Image (cartoon, rainbow over all chains, first blue to last red; front, side, top):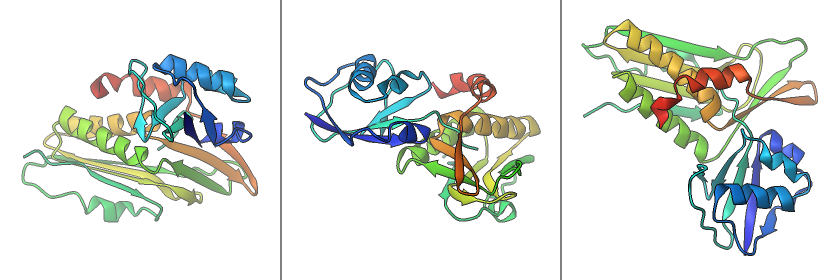
Length: 85
Length: 153
């Protein structure tokens, strides 16, 4: 299964060498597993363990307790800590 | 039926006076409170850039707006937020509340801006000429949002 990665905010600069897609076999089923896979598979992936990062799948924000089901071509957004206002 | 929050997410300049006029006038309004956040001149700052998420930002503003409406029993709430590049002195965000009493109107403004800073997907970058520097939220930002966040769950 191939998923599409989207980076927003400062993390986009830090991960500029990362590919836009990632192969996951099998896909993660928990929030923590998703972070571990991203951290392990991406260059400079340690950034993924920042506790203030947020993650979304297909434009839906994830919460730490939610079960994850991924399908081919799903979009995973990695969102830097927010700084609006 | 409960009124809904008026949410505006735009790349165009914000005019606070014009935005205040969007608040509906109701006989029960006893207080109107507003907050405008501006681009602060900071040394050699030439511009401030606000990036947003194409879907999640508007969703988050809607959730924050509806939560504030309910929590403070507001008669009206407007949240207007810029994205794109702004120069010193330009409004970034404008919030206006209307309530029967002053405490609700004032607290709702504080709630909305404190929560928005850490819960709405915006990313801020300061520009000095061609050099950009991301602005990360501070611990104070997180603490101020945390005091209200029970209302969001």
